[in-house]
Image 1 (cartoon, rainbow, N blue to C red):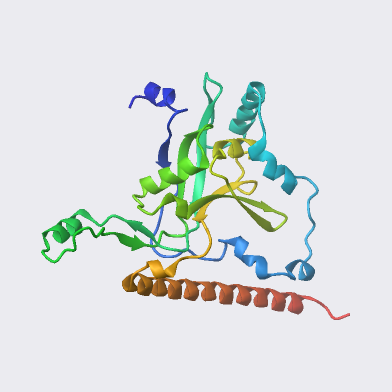
Image 2: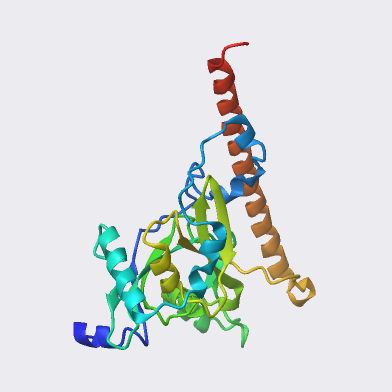
Amino acid sequence: MSGGEEHGAAHNSFEMTWGSTTSSGYCSQEDSDPELEQYFTARTSFIRKPRPDKGPSRDDQIEWGKQELSPSEIEQKVKEYNAQIDSNLFMALNKDGSYTGFIKVQFKLVRPVSVPPARKAAAAAGQDGRRTVGVKRRTSFYLPKDTAKHLHISSRTKAREVIEALLKKFTVVDNPRKFALFERIERHDQVYLRKLSDEERPLQLRLCAGPCEKALSLVLKENETGEVNWDAFTMPELQNFLRILQREEEEHVKQIVQRYARARDKMREALASSTPG
């Protein structure tokens, strides 16, 4: 597709470009997933930090996705946004009043995803006379926690479309309803997560919040929809789930032990540096 054709179709479709690279295994928990640090209920009592008065309130941030912007307001915000970024990931206005730009989506999945088997494996399975007719073969694996993706989308692109496009890019065959897009905001050493509705438009959130990742970032997580009917699964599937749960439990315990160890070290440092009386 030529450059002119691509921009002409930008408001009806969207393309994806690679952002940060992915790696195998789990990333360090030293500075990731700060929302898991909510168990530090007394942290601000031990170490008090001045809180800045400036910055939007949480109520203002939630209203970002509900703002109805006029064409002149959109034009002004696009100019302000482009003036703040230090890359070529600019936003661009279209003649029809829409605009296009880039969003970055971080993956915070704790469960494995399923993809079709490799072609060689699928061919070998097809030649196997013992193959069960009607059985869909797939491979499950964990996406690295430091995986991120830049998407070039339109202001008309909805959250549900972003999820579907991400799964398609990674050839994930799981139902898109298993996943949800979240808005993540850091403010005053606190992390807030809000699940986006299917109809919300992520690029509008990005435009209103500005390019700062702390002001707003987008995260793909599992969509917790309620109780699971375990009777509907086969024995091999249930055994596989147990292995997955054990791995999740071991990883979660490791994270908690590490964070308590860091908190203990900081307390000891504070005690050693303080003078009695």
